[in-house]
Amino acid sequence: MTEPITDADSYAAMAALSALPYFPSDPIAQTEIANQIRLMCKTDDQAQWLVQRTFELWSKWEGPRELRAIFCARFKPQDGVEVMRSAVFEDGIVPAEKPLPVWHMPVVPGAEKLLPQTRPQLIEQSNTAALVPTSDFDQLPELSRKQWKQQNQFAKQLEAVITAPEDRPKLSSPKSIRQSDYVRLNEDPIHEARPEGSYQRITQADIEVAVAELHRKKAQDADAPARKDDDN
Image (cartoon, rainbow, N blue to C red):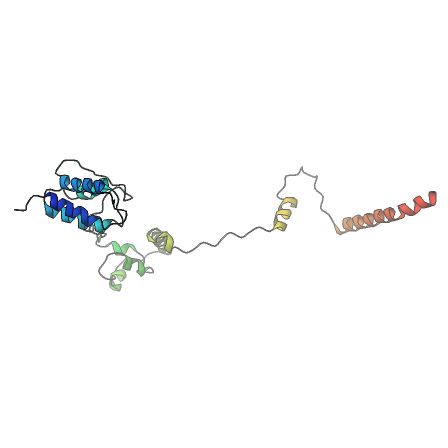
């Protein structure tokens, strides 16, 4: 029969925990931590387990409440005060001592025949023991061109679903629009609502008339100072 915990056992457990960074150095605080261990643990084995488990989970001292949360993850405390949630871990649950069993997708007999012949790599990604022999595909009824197209399209959609986002091909960034494109869109009569019959296309003759008018105005502006001097 395991001997009940003693004051010396609880103090030894507290002294072992003092190896953690930020452990209280005040004697009164250390005595209170030893009392908490004495109240929680029934035996010295439980106290030694608590010390070892704390070293596995903590990199620094987290406080007496979190110490009780670790103990309650396996044992029922002797004083009946249970702490079921921890503030140290993100989900509020103290990690299990043993890793949880890994779930494997069950193999459905004949599921590999649903995949098209042109996508054998999808069969390898399932939990089947080996690839389906080619003879099994030969026994399938011949599909029409439309059915093959639908089946290949389904296989591509299935592959996109089972592929992790970080493994999917990167999409090309959209092409930037140049300033000239904005000007063209703003001036293009196709993209701008105009009353019917109000738009008149500019011809080469219109350009030549506008250039001649511009030269005439410049000549007038150049002759204006000379005419002013003559008047004076």
